[in-house]
Image (cartoon, helix red, strand yellow):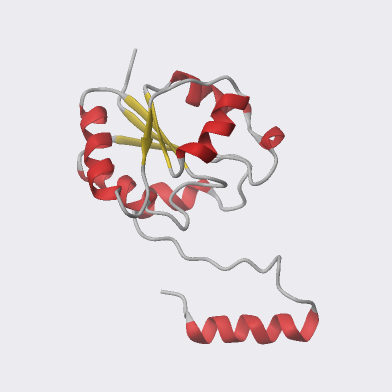
Amino acid sequence: MSTATLYLVATPIGNLADMVPRALAVLQSVDAIAVEDSRHSGKLLQHFNISKPLIPYQDHNERDAAERILHLLQQGKRVALISDAGTPAIADPGYRLVRLAHQNGVRVESLPGPARPSPRWLVPACLPTVFYFVDFCPPSSKRVARLCRCWLMNPPR
């Protein structure tokens, strides 16, 4: 039973032990995996003994790769999209692939995982997602100054 689906699979940020079982099950069951960097993702997949065809998907090739991925999906295949670390479609061109899938009636499923942003932001929006992390700002008054500067330079859309 294969239903064409594009899966957005969050990957660990730094520690492979953070990989969640559902994400592993999806990566083991899909027909292909779209990756930001095959060398980086290859380490993750090798660690979990997952061997699937990899499709490079980055800013410089996203148009051609998206068409290739869409073609697989239209054939009823299941494809996972992963980034080097965290949730795909955040700070990478994954949102364009999500938009293309939606425009062509392909099911998109976002899996929760070890990354901070909620997967619920990604699937319905089909837009570039912008958000600000506060975790790594300097303490106290310097943090406020940096946030104010960031807000003035990049107001929310």
